[in-house]
Length: 453
Image (cartoon, rainbow, N blue to C red; front, side, top):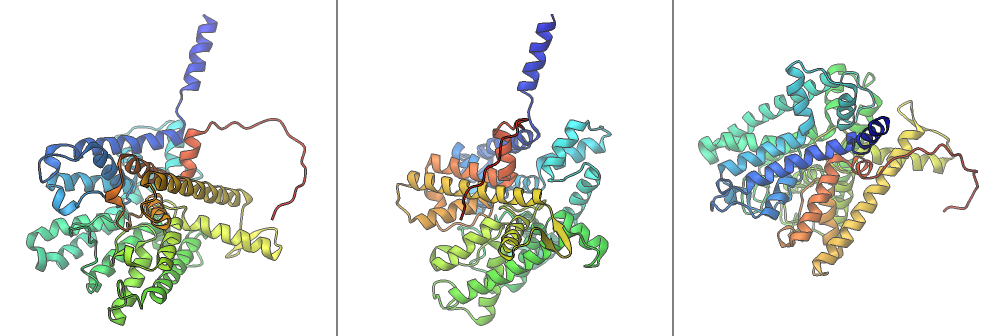
């Protein structure tokens, strides 16, 4: 009897899911549900439903707020299909566990320690204190921002679309704030035919930035209203976001302003506006104002770097996150100067954070390179390697910008890109922790020096 109890306990311990695995399974469940709904005849204008692989791809892209698509959202999806897509974007942007937690917590359910730990990891928090207050703030900020801009965009769209402007306003407000990049303008053009609509570009760009800086930063700025009182995290996010946007815009403008296929034939005001917008969008959102396949290779490289860096922690964007990139740069600068510690705005950054940042950067690089190589093999080297790499980084950074390859992938290419989008959304660290068994060895081995560099 005792042996049987020990065996049952051992099996329970063996098959107990880790928090990281539960986080990923929640996204997998949402993707599967979305795919099933998109396969229904009612979801498409031709009443045929999407092909299963296409349904999985589009559902993954929406749930992971990426924006890569193999269907024309306006012309191929029905009202029901567009509604499913919108709900997937909204739930994917906030996180299915976040919304589920809010519902059950509002019903009076008391969370156990293990459940709080899962929620803590899904929100990338170090402590459990204030988790439910944070979730309520996330919901409040999301619907306040999306609601305001939905009204503004609906008013802007009314002369063109009539009362359909309400749907256009809501869809694009949610898509932009969640950094999804889906649009209802049709023909895979995104905003390419609205380059002179500075009001629309300004609204979409603002939504992208607000969704990309993260909910903790939004609350910190609104609550303290003083730069000196803001946390180190907020300061790093704000500074790095501003630098990346300005630097990216400057490089895009300098490189492509003479390119007649992209910015060359536009006025100076349009060139500056598009350069700024593309710098904002390519870090995580995916809206584009010109054909990326016609951009210079240097501009595409700049965009690849920005897409890889991505948005901020606890935001609706992907990538390795700008704070990770900043810590790596600060650590490198500290080594060059011979400093033993990293200091930013008068605060020291711990060694644990430095190690985690380098681990995330390394794992993300390995994943992107490996996925890019596999996609190149699947592609049969029909396209250039830099084009395949662009598509891979766009999926990993949950950006959704494409240069014309997305519709051409076969089943295996679409599935690999879907997996890459999922990894980019949940975080490469979370994904690796979910599939690799972690064991802390009690053995202490002798240390020996070796040469590096």
